[in-house]
Image (tube, rainbow, N blue to C red; front, side):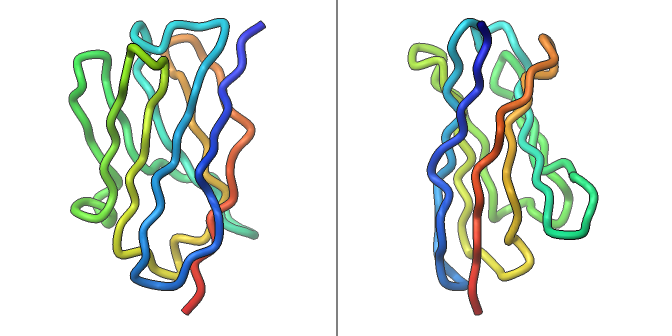
Length: 113
């Protein structure tokens, strides 16, 4: 059974940082392009970041410079480092293994002003 489990979410004040993790079981993340998405209340799910199998990254344009995706294949885990957080970053954050088409269940990030 394949599971992607996000963790590291929480409540922070504006300007703070969080690091999200997405750990997999039943699937080898090293073989997968991994994505981060987020969904704010009342809004559609939106792309945040992508990290390919060779470690190349790309981001939603507005997030470049604040968010950094990385991966540790030995731990079967990908990360999203989020700095200088803003209230508009409040959302449920999901990881998505696009090569194999599996989603995690999400972790809540709440940023207060």
